Length: 70
Image (cartoon, rainbow, N blue to C red; front, side, top):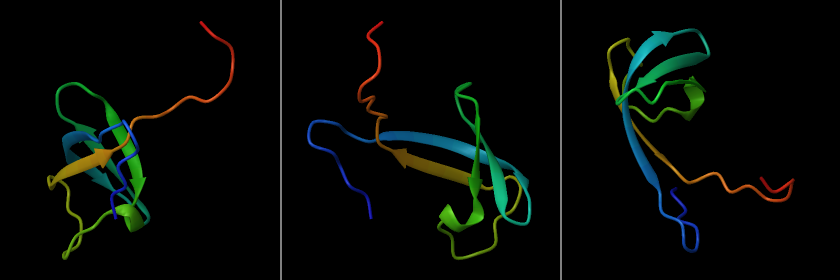
């Protein structure tokens, strides 16, 4: 389920699976955006995850609450 916050939209990223372990995988994001490591249980697929699979991420912005002002 995707929840869109009040005035904030979702960010869409595409990437490629570069490493698969027993419980996690590494995704290299397109456009020099870096890489992320995610648990396998967070991936939605009807087949087993393979190196080279293309993925799409839909994430909401990170909203900072509190702390010091810059």
